[in-house]
Amino acid sequence: MKNAVNSNQTNGQWYGTEPEIPRSAITETINTDVLICGAGNAGMAAAIVAGKQGVDTLVIEKNNTVGFIKPYMGAIDTKAQKRVGDKAKIDKEEIVQELLNYGTKYTEELQIYGPDYKPSKYLGANKVDEKLVRLWADESGETFDFLADELSEYGIKHVAEYDVGDGYHGVFKAYPVHTKLLVPFIKGGPFAIAHAGVYVLEKFFAKKARRNGAKFMFNTAMVKIIKEGNRAVGVIAKKKNGKFIRIKAKLGVLICTGGYAGDEELVAKLNPEATAVSTLRFTHKGNYGDGIKAGIWAGGEKEQYPSAMLFDRGPTKPGGKSGLPIRVGGSFDSFFYGSQPFLKVNMDGKRYCNESVPYDIILNPLQNEKNGVACMIWDANYWKHIKQFHTIGCSRMIPSSSKPKTYEGMGWFMNYGLNLMMRFKGYIKKANTIEGLAKKLKLPVEDFKSTVERYNQMAKQGRDSDFGKPAGDLIALDKPPYYGITNAGWLITTMDGLHINENIQVVDKEGTPIEGLYAAGDVAGGFFANNFYPELIVGVAVGKTMTFARHAVLHMTGALNEK
Ligand SMILES: Cc1cc2nc3c(=O)[nH]c(=O)nc-3n(C[C@H](O)[C@H](O)[C@H](O)COP(=O)(O)OP(=O)(O)OC[C@H]3O[C@@H](n4cnc5c(N)ncnc54)[C@H](O)[C@@H]3O)c2cc1C
Image (tube, rainbow, N blue to C red; front, side, top):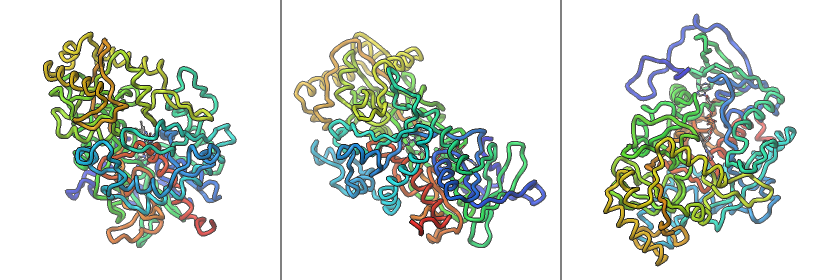
């Protein structure tokens, strides 16, 4: 089931026209209290909460199974964080300001203010809804404590990842917000991978939701919202066999259908900037923007600023380009090293930006560079350099020192294996000389050679007078063999969606809530802007997704007043 809404009619707008479904085509009517559309991160958290409230809960999912749940859960003041004390203590006001400011034109400002520049000192884009940012800061702790308590009967443990090295990535501050729900039988060892638990967590969410009373209907796609006056009272959904059903929801409909990364033409239309720097695209199988369209048809509005989660891990072959068509690929197609602050050059063989910046910030300037791609270069001392870089979150290579163990950091063995695979696939190139590497990467030999020479010279002096890269990350490349790859963005998901208020209700153009209609997760906007995903506030996307899903359910069931 690709796009659930196969409406051939359009009104000239990207979201088309609400499909007309004749009464005679509807084969069944189902009644529930709470209807959750989409069984991904938002939907599954909502299902556990709603079931616990003792209300009739139905989850419909377009695919034949529960979606993928990311175990990185950015939160503040959870019990797991309190257990490790000051190491995971976060100044709430500071992190709120950081989120609001994230998206400043950092690189340009660095040029103006010099290497001591700290972005949080300056006013940023502030294109997000501060009320939503504060909601995450205020309620993420209790949300993940609740989920951790619910899942504890399966031996799942909630742990805090506080090893943030010296607390900075370049000049960007890193916050110990990262918490994980660890599934017990994944023990780590040489495969102590960053994604421990990733393929199983959803099964436990589903088990718990069912145990709390939630029911599931798979292969059932929400198509449109049913309204009576200004109230959403249910949806029309389409089964895989082509039949339509009506689902009436007494308390509310929560749309959790994710973003629209599945539809690359729509991404190109709404977010040409993200498209221009991407070579690889992940899609959650069902995410084609169905919920955003249905929300608009029901009177809601999509936020104006496009926003995609971009990771600097989209490899392409030498001579490759960013932009349409964007190859679809998951973790094993992406290039994990991409986020290490090694030397990066454009296709003219020249540096174009400070490499010690978060994933998105190194990608956005590629709009101005040839082919929208860059080459990353490393040498035989790579592991020593990686230890020194000490990146965090899903780019962490060195096993974390956090206790209890979080199994973060893929370690040398896993890392070596992944890189070997990328070499066999023809992405990573290896040569004994800088000249040889330049030829393999299709870079102009002399220009590239002088870039490396200048970089090495500045590394020896401990000062990057060209781009302000911090001395700790400025390490000479002088031990052959040399390695390189052509790389750009991996478009993970879109994060611009329906306007919601602080009760997670979908609002219309005037900001008036549509009663009974809620949206949580990537289907809703207001939290990120400008293609910036603050990766140093690790897991904040899932963090806000689940926090808002819970809040929506508590609001529609009236439980917020009882808190
Ligand atoms: C590889 C990868 C790495 C990531 N890393 C991080 C990270 O490190 N930190 C972080 O915070 N976030 C990360 N994210 C992003 C995070 O997973 C998303 O922001 C979050 O999942 C959003 O959850 P959601 O519930 O909105 O969407 P999803 O989890 O995508 O769920 C949407 C569900 O809705 C279903 N659906 C779609 N249309 C319909 C329909 N018409 N009817 C019924 N069901 C429908 C889909 O099939 C899907 O199951 C990552 C994502 C990916 C893919």
